[in-house]
Length: 299
Image 1: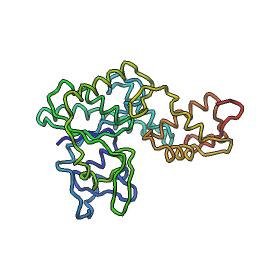
Image 2: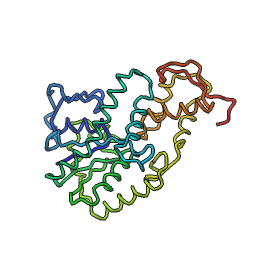
Image 3: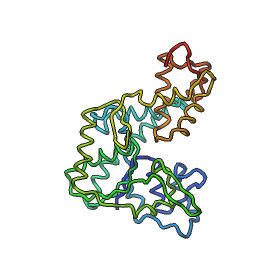
Image 4: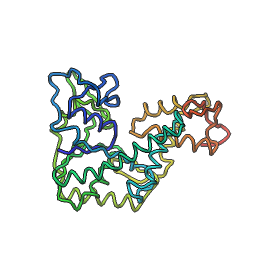
């Protein structure tokens, strides 16, 4: 079956789940090495049936920016590139070129899906209640609404009970190691035609609204202004100097909303330009900058 996911980390983990490739247990699915030699796996590990080539990754960051532009437009590709380069760790033209090529390659994933649907009429979509994932899911429903393919979905649960009175909570599918994907298959259900129509309609409403950002509010995907998450930055930054990397890391740890570090970095840059945040020690690598709140400006 064709597996569709909306994040690169989770797609990499799924590829391993369908091929029993080696993963790094200390870091989880963000440290997947698909080309490495197979490693011993737990006897109870039941792989997801199929081949890793059946995994489609659509990491288009549709929760951010203008969604009236085509998903594969130069605008969206430039937007994704700007998010990936927010940290300033590598400002070389070679690095930017490599990223551009990688982004362009992901744009070919949706046409690859359509090509696969010519012979395989069933897909399974893995989504969660995070902005990037819901946007991808609703967008896909709109794209495939006129097709005859069957769509099965697996929605990420909020938590999972483990042996020993342990409850594991999840934020997105990127939290799931390869050997555990098959345990979620019982949650699979077929999407009805009316549901597909409902989600497609929701996406068209979001496109018409075309807010700079989309967030999940009371379980509903909603268009919001670009400063929507700024209050989290303002809650954490004080008059005490702090490295930008530490500030962003604290926000990610305390408020796990599946919002990328690049978005907070972008908003911090905007707050520096507006004078709300002072740079005490600058650096070409933005995350190394020393920052503090500007107490002369009310925030």
